[in-house]
Image (tube, rainbow, N blue to C red; front, side):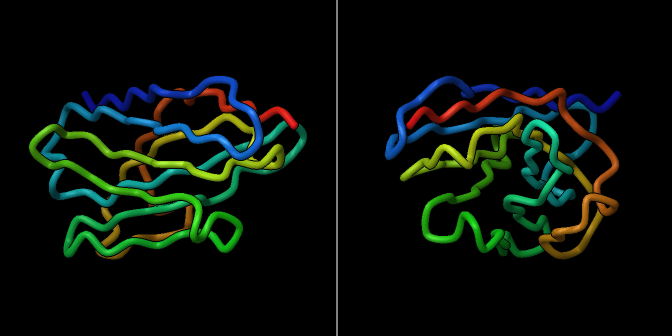
Length: 124
């Protein structure tokens, strides 16, 4: 049974940083692309960042480029999202996802397992 457990969310002031973690279990982590998505109240879920299994290439949404960095540690079965220079508009529930895509896909349909999410709140 695949499980994804996010941690590291919380309340932070604008300009601050947080690091989210997602611990995966249940299948061979190194063979799956990992992604982060987020959903703000009243909005649709949107892509944030992804890292491929094939060559660890990454993809980031334009809204977080130069501020957020995704990385993975296959030895720890964990994917991270380092978030710097946080803005109030980054406030959302952040979800980790795992999928079979060869590339760092931005499409939520490419991911077949999802975590329960962790809340990130950025105050102004």
